[in-house]
Length: 524
Image (cartoon, rainbow, N blue to C red):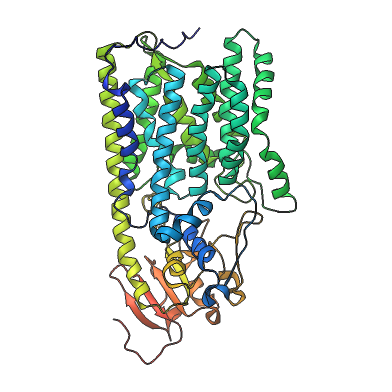
């Protein structure tokens, strides 16, 4: 039997540094550091979302009204949209987005620390091994609505545990009906995560009170019903909404999701960063002075089973299962604790190693985002050559080799900045039936209306998500666009841009072409 958590230290007992309030505040502040430098957070999908935010805010501009239609709707995918709408009126779109994105890892970190404190009655020295997963693949990919919903779910889970520990079930029921609705509106997957977290915790709590496992499960389901109100919203949202749910039990993709849980830029370092916490968890299992919390171990197990059962695509949203994996691992690491009162020497060693790992991971993500931001600055100088309202087809080159495909595709949605800064048209929005607020009405763009028409590869390179660059340049409908923007393109047939006028370029091959040349000197 796994021993219960050690009781809180008696009042007046000196706390080790990892249990102090100062430590908690510093951890929350540290989580914001990677995003302080970039004026536009370089998260893959975020720039495409920002294009939608611009239409949401300024959709009556003639150039936007002729290409887009924005319509609010009640759906489980509105988190950052709802936050941007008032904040952008106060600060402007880009500062508002940066503020919101910075807050997301801060809330997630605070929630994780609160959960650990509630379960263990103190913060274990190993808690810092879990914090790098705040900047997991899901966040760096720019799933910002999901990430916001998860951040709120983590804080809500801490509150759920606290009210349960205090026996305040009536108050919990009253609070969590609106809380569940808010989290569902941010993103339905975050609401689902909260339900799994709450269910797991209540099963273990009921079992610890002497109930059999079956009775504990039944009681947990009853407790979790207060989170079920969004089911009514879900049914209303999905009725006739379409959206594919597919790719079940694709174990190859699931293993890829596991290996890439900390994917960023440097493959060997990112994989080592994944391997280190796994070793720490294994050490906690075999080291006699460490053990695992029943509650959080069971929670991690429930999340792992859910990850295995989920398809890759739900309601048209890809990577549904992948998004869960960082929190499977985070919960497993948060479960680690000492069997009895903290062994001070071992605690200091573990805390120091955990802090070193967290600082190293934070430094690498910070530098990676700095490099990506500087690349954004270079590429976005192309916008200076665009008139307001320009219709731009962007083609972003993806790598072909294993090493070149590991770094996050941070330029994939740079075209969204055409909408943000020039009120123009870009071909990198998403067409997800039943889960979109934005519709493209620029019919002249044809099949180049939506993502992934913005992604290209070399002519001889196979890829799941993109087509050969020369084919794309040859076949896109020129009457639907005013400019072609090539971003880090692979080599292409020069004949495909014959008759166009180059108005901007970089040494890496990136170029901006005017489709219908005018009386102006081309840029060499």
